[in-house]
Length: 447
Image (tube, rainbow, N blue to C red; front, side, top):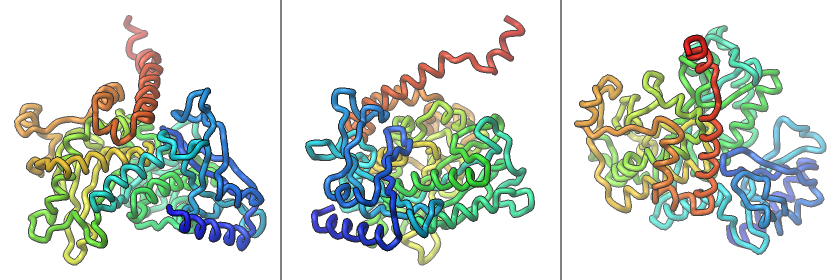
């Protein structure tokens, strides 16, 4: 943002704060894991915060800084100003802004996930592209955070009295709308008490901010009704997990760079190279798009989550699906990556997804043949002959692939890359030393 644009944005924020009787402003940012962080300032501090940022101790923020370099500056982004609809609105209102994290002596902090995404989007912009995304986030409603007792026994698209969370979804959609987030669909998902609200696609930075807002709003509305919402990828054994299917496209100005009317799939050469990049690098970016130990309980055969690295038009067993083109809807031409889950850090996930696709374009990767058959029904030998690989089966496998990946390191930057890998290895070590209920029930009676 240039100086004049920032000055205009600051003037707009100060005017809106006065018009809406705002007393508190929450400054939002995320750590490397995508956990939302914030601190509040009063309206009296707002003008100074907009001009100079607000200092804070970054040493306790996951992946930010060592104890001897702890000072950080949160610089509010005026384009992200929104009132919080669940707070008072007539007086002492509360607003929020996302922040970019700067170093005290100036310049972006390389460990800030929002900056990482900005940097990858600049790479796309230098190639002439805008990266648009439209993720579909699934989640569960439970009675509380201590168990998995659901609210309903509904199924996919059900509209019956069994769908006890209809009011929760409606209030969530209304709250998102009040915060400037457009919603296309909301519906019951396939598992009992599982739901989905789909946001209208937009540029990747705005969408990453929207994902963070969406997750908080879903949880906040649930809390107000005395229930708990979770984006945990696989909370219940034997039931579908929660995915975040990411619809995506590249635009060149107003033109969809993925569209070609003369292609059988209506996909341009650019789109096919992008798909090829995603397919080639999918295993190594999975540690970022599926960053938790629990993520790999979802990425198993039989529960609609992708396991095999393939693509096709309508086959939902593939990693990448190409929604069918509808005449006159060239701008809707897109691809859908089905592996990410909704508990990822969206800034980092969109970064590595984009980096993999751009790698395919820059290096002119050749896309393999589409796989329209059900990949799950193939034998290992059949998949081997077709050149169909697999995603990592555990967080450890994913970490080992990411560690060797030039694409992931360059996408995240060395500072954040090393902090992320270190954090994930600690998580894996903590997990593998646990003695689970499964082990006690399985082995204690016989060993």
